[in-house]
Image 1 (cartoon, rainbow, N blue to C red):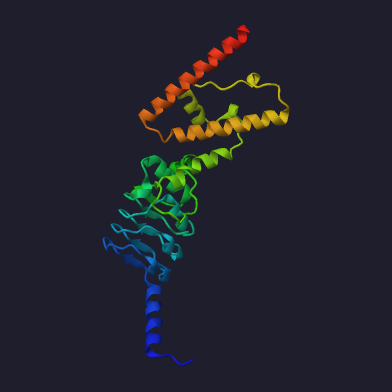
Image 2: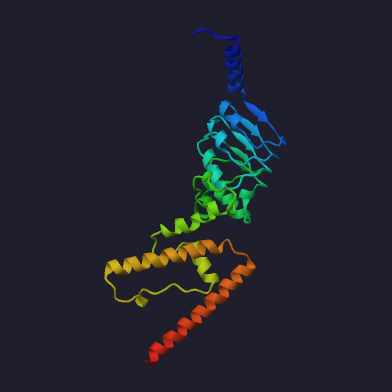
Length: 255
């Protein structure tokens, strides 16, 4: 096959892109970074202050160790899925993106749960303790959906997974961890005695405990998302519900 001059230049250009190790496009008004697919040797990428919304092209950069994405338009932490296959990634700056949501703690825990190999996140060193806590307090991100992007709040793609995770839990409600037990104490809830359960068969009793525990765990996880006003509303509802149950018990005892 005869090579034309255009083909030779094209191959030379591809070879040059393949060898690039650092890319700095800070404040370049970029919306498309598909060129990164042709630069698999990149080790440091600086894309802060742009309008980038997808991290998929970066997934090809297996040598990447530092990624700067501050002040972009990353809509959801689900985009972190594209970074999970980058074994050398140690530094990530993602602050001031829509995906950061309203809860800094949940955001940081979710990022560290997804990318536990990070040594620095948003210019702040990552500790071993944080990584351990992230396994419990961070949310599991799901693969991003490209359909209807921007039609729903950016937090939904990962905060809703809290309920998903909770419904898969089969832990006995009488043996909750310290964090969950603490949440119960703040609401004035007492562990339910086994004597309160009706005389079901063992299978029915186990199913009832699992269902109750799933609901309780989901509620406790979602409580972490509420502010003072929201918690006060929950508290009033719980008090009202407890009073109603107490009144019902008194009536049953009288009968």
